Length: 209
Image 1 (cartoon, rainbow, N blue to C red):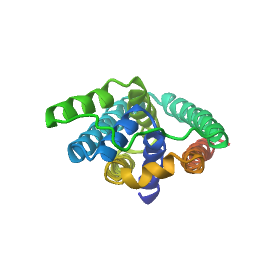
Image 2 (image 1 turned 30 degrees about the vertical axis):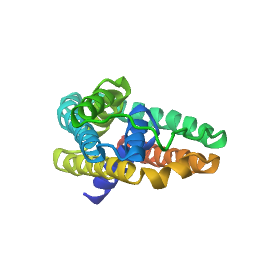
Image 3 (image 1 turned 60 degrees about the vertical axis):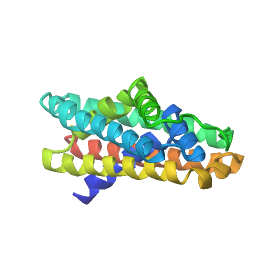
């Protein structure tokens, strides 16, 4: 149970921590102290909903076709290794995050809500990460353990978005420095490699000798 929870938390964290359009939006909102709570809450709920849909919906569907489980696991491991190598490259050649501290992205609850929904739902990569990748990997767990896997991924999502929004003014000077960007990308790469190694180990252990 604990192993499933940790694997879900690590994989969920590895997929959402990499700085992208949604994270930069949340970071800018935090810098401007503009509608931070609703932006962080909606971002977390969107991510959590897609994780649940992928892990319990697609995961259950994949589990009914036995050969798809190892296929999804090996494919997920390959994806994570490639992503980890890209993050390693970014760590070696960092690109600091450029954000103006005075920048204000929205000024109303409604506009903040609409923009958060757009950043969270109109990005095709989020569906690949949460619905396809997480769903496929979750299919390798029996249903009771899959719930712990989902709980770990969802908890990480909530922690990340709220920490990003409310810690933005502390995080931004770090991310604007090359060494800060290098540490973040290095951390992402490490998590990717750890989760990929766990997937490969599980598949090797489950393969007939």
